[in-house]
Length: 210
Image (tube, rainbow, N blue to C red; front, side):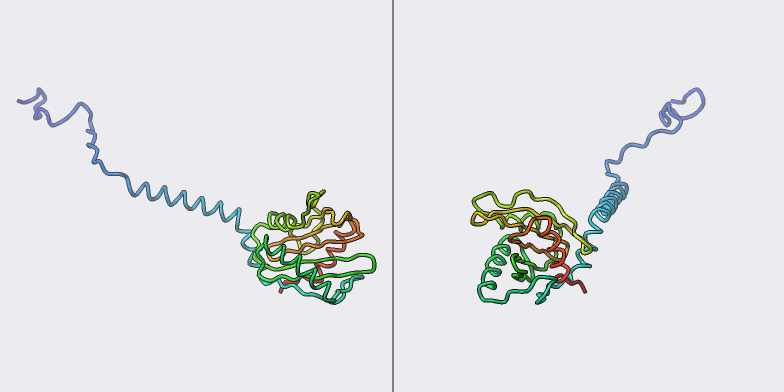
């Protein structure tokens, strides 16, 4: 049968360009390109968020802790009793915070004793690590109270101070954490504000970066 225009009937549809029948195949190339784009965007976002932390962790991975005999008005107590007390607190903190190296030190300057535990590690979340260390300094009276941020000084990171009660006496508790080290100190007969200043001096003397 021939159509009125002379063309074979049934070879063309009403559309000028007939639609191609679906092949049933997925557009794998387009899916792959879209997947790569999403992955690249996710990688870029992760780099923006976590990149600075990685740089700081690597930069501070060579941190070391020293134990100088004198720090300002403080003198290192090397007696056996002081060593035992410092090591006891150091071991307690080590149960909560994983440190590569750690030291327990006791300094005194007349009426004030400062028990300092300091160590090194690759610390990805200084804030939460310091919180964990403060959690060790606890007793039946509620642990460390009135915790607040203080100036961390030129070494940076996070520094906080608070107060705890031991044998009916208040002790000031101050600590720091950065991406390479952690330190917690207990001060007797010293306010939290003065203890924060003392910890800055102790930290500057014991924490060293290559």
